[in-house]
Length: 142
Image 1 (cartoon, rainbow, N blue to C red):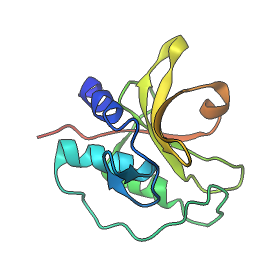
Image 2 (image 1 turned 45 degrees about the vertical axis):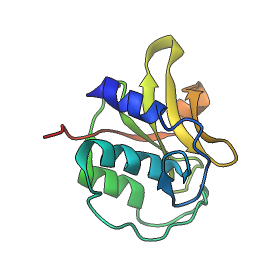
Image 3 (image 1 turned 90 degrees about the vertical axis):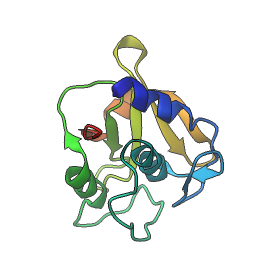
Image 4 (image 1 turned 120 degrees about the vertical axis):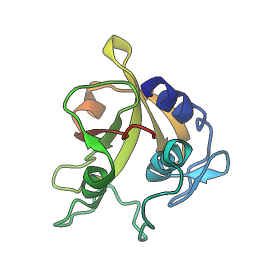
């Protein structure tokens, strides 16, 4: 399933960045990308999401993104293409960015929706790696 997830994520490349959207080709944010992949493999989304801010520096007592991932995805400590990566962009801030691991090894990369860039595939460089707050896998399809 991991190759299929990576292929699905790559099919979103070029979709413009639109906060809180999840429509391939029309607009999405990083969570919307994951939601779109969920719909492709699992059908309807498991819950309606509340409004959220795009602020990567937001501080709070509750890690809503990680909590949601723990509820619907499977945590993992190893690394495989198709994994959902969650990032904490600033020290002391809650985790507010996510993407799909596309490739591992020396040429590691991930696919994410990035403000002012849209959906892109970026190198999983040391600065990005240092921000990983969690790794998760989609549940198997039925």
